[in-house]
Amino acid sequence: MKPLIYAALMMVAAIIAAFAYQQFLNTPKPLPVSVMQAPYLPLSPFDYAIKLPVHLRELKQYSTQPKDNPLTNHGATLGRVLFYDRGLSRNTLVACSSCHTQIAGFDGPNRFSIGLSGKITERHSTGLAFAGFNANGRYFRDEHAVTLEDQVLEPIHDQIEMGLAKGDLVTRVSMRPWYAQLFTNAFGDAKITQTRISRALAQFVRSMVSFDAPYDRARSKVKDRTKPFPAFSKLQNGGKFLFMTPKSAGGYGCASCHETDAFIMLGRHNNGLDRERNTKPENASLRGASLRNIAVRAPHMHDGRFPTLGAAIDHYSTDIQPHPLLGAQLKDGNGNPLRLNINLPEKAALKAFLETLTDEKFLFDPKYSNPFINRGE
Image 1 (tube, rainbow, N blue to C red):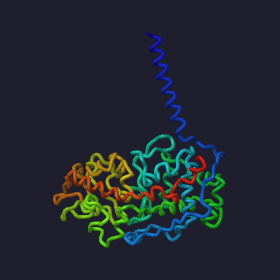
Image 2: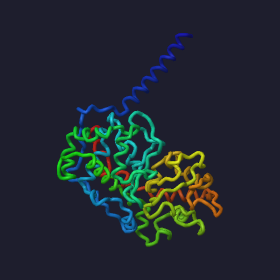
Image 3: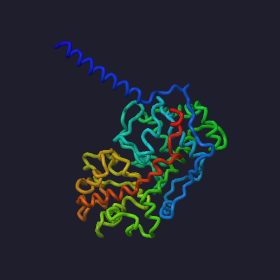
Image 4: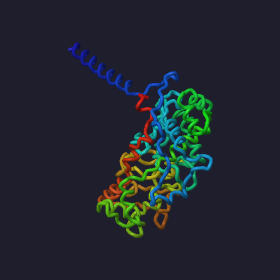
């Protein structure tokens, strides 16, 4: 009997070892500074100019592009390479793209982002489409970063996320031979500075606009977005009505927080996720990203607590919690949480409408893709 037990244990050990080895093979390895593989770039840069369709031109008033950092094709190209370069993390394992993946609308698939040593961040990452447009120009969910140029550097220097010391960023970039020409193309000479790095990254992020979803193609055929779209199904139009229309007129007024045809938030809101005693002060009132591509960006909310879009809709239906900072749109006349009690057909309609915001072209556009992928990095 003992030999059988021993054989079984050895088999289990072999399976575990094989699984561990496979995980080892699938895990990115630190790259020695001497191992440098150049990005694969087109001979002529992609066109990163933002050409908004008519129904999105109102966004121009919310543009955060500063006069001293105009968006250029070469600047955004440099930003793209920096965005995907794992060499910008202390152990060369993590890039900006590790937490913001294109196929997920530059959101992240994990509840919390995973940093360079396996530690997790305090918040779920956020989608980047239309990040270059907001009312006050501040960044992060709590808006503590004054500009996008400031924001893009914080994850690089954060000890949980990418962990590269401030004094090492320019040195690390300077050691990668392809950057001299990219900086020359973008800024006129090969000088590498932290300011130029931040400006190039900000240009790339600002270029991320998403306007080729089914919603946009249908919207372009009508003058009034509150009217039914001929190209939409009955279910999709029903969800659009519920989303766009105030509660007083038979809808749920979602558009009062997710504004414009880009569905961006123009300020910080508390949406009743937690009662006051369960909420950290810095999480009490936050600004979310555009709802563009929301159907492929699960999990949802700042802490990724909702694994599906349906679960997020359920929150507004039955689970809004009382809080002193609860948004006015989510309170009744007495200041109590206004739980919407959305029925099943309405939930299906809202979900169908939100799925029309998925822009397949944006999710696969080569100008936003990983330039190292064709060279094995």
